[in-house]
Image (cartoon, rainbow, N blue to C red; front, side):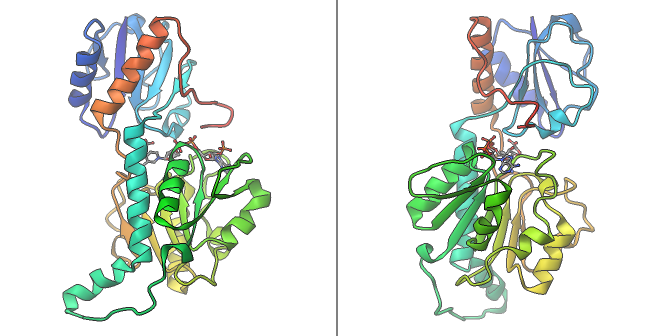
Length: 313
Ligand code: NAP
Ligand code: GLV
């Protein structure tokens, strides 16, 4: 029985070493070497080459090495097996750090001071709102969205969340579905996107959505997208920034990754680009989670954090 590691863009040997230390009895194989396909019971994948997981007759589970699973569903030759994703405090904490950092950057107008510094400009802004004056709206109130919401709330932001199904969370204004979307956007100064990429959410951050954000806030509106690049229409974000209806965008994810060098997002003065690392999967933490899942399955216990192929997340 073996575990197949299938990934692109990451250092596979770091992962192999970590898994081997945690599962010493299990051969860890990779796509780049000959291996017995019948022996593979488990796959751990991050953006495996589509079609490369066919012909694994004894596959018991596929583990995403991240929280998202859109890259798995994008493989139309993905074998039928339960799919589990990452739900782990290490990854969740990293994402909340990112969201809190960038909300505070907007609250404290830090981008302005970073622009002023090279010009040696000593210009204060006397209109410095308190966190409670800024309305943050989190799209996606799942594992990541809820944790970020609680941490933003603890700092004092006025936080609301939007999800597919109704939710009741103490201290949070909650909205759901298409019916709740307009009211949610209309009270949002900083929109934080932590949605999964599915058929329903593709292109959701478009001109229509951006036009619906609050225009009556003390600051903003601003956009922070750390969900997936496929959620956003980059031409619409650029148009809203240029029209002044959007005052800033912090993007960790892009329609095409890595972000092409000719993308106008790189040099737009109101755009902050980070290289899809808002919440990286750290091998130590994430291999431990998956090794635990494998041990659970081997002990006949149910797999945790299983995704629903019909919903796509
Ligand atoms: P999750 O626990 O599955 O939560 C997803 C949330 O999105 C849920 O609240 C869900 O609503 C909501 N949602 C899904 N489809 C929707 C729709 N059509 N309309 C409204 N709400 C919808 O996922 P998670 O663990 O929080 O992760 C979210 C995403 O973050 C991942 O899928 C991944 O794409 C991204 N991510 C990015 C990074 C990075 O480094 N940039 C790192 C990790 C994850 P319900 O609660 O009603 O189901
Ligand atoms: C990263 O993007 C993840 O889905 O974990």
